[in-house]
Length: 149
Image 1 (cartoon, rainbow, N blue to C red):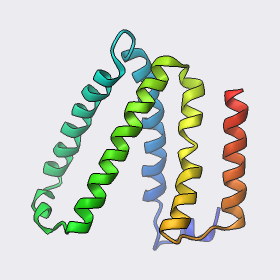
Image 2 (tube, rainbow, N blue to C red):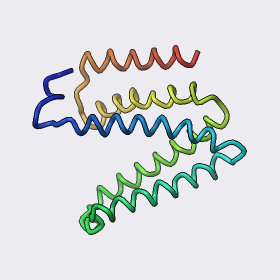
Image 3 (spheres, rainbow, N blue to C red):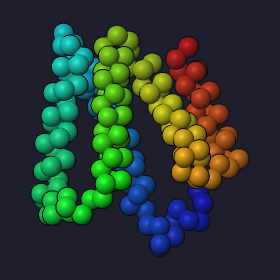
Image 4 (tube, rainbow, N blue to C red):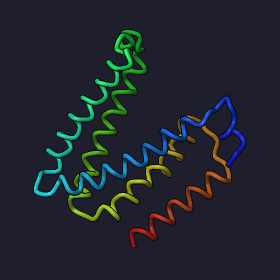
């Protein structure tokens, strides 16, 4: 682990939330596979999305951040809408994939998004691409191939 991971400035909460995200994503896949049985994948995605929407708005109201809507700029609106469309497309494809195949094969392929995100972040956000990043991306890709074969 790098020193930055443990410094006071960066904190550790980002790591806790990232780890919780991974746990909940794993639960999502397993629970969805059971729940999608006998249900159209698009309908299942729509139902899940309604729950996610309600939960997100609940958190907005619990944290009293709803007043911030008026201060969102045009650029942010455009990119948040595009991100939402990408999320929707991802979920629709993911649900169709887990309905047709096994979660243990679909999930690793889905996690190739980590490698794709790294590449897109370097190209569009000009983030650093280090030797560690390259090695990690190769290992994730190799691990995905091993898990799927």
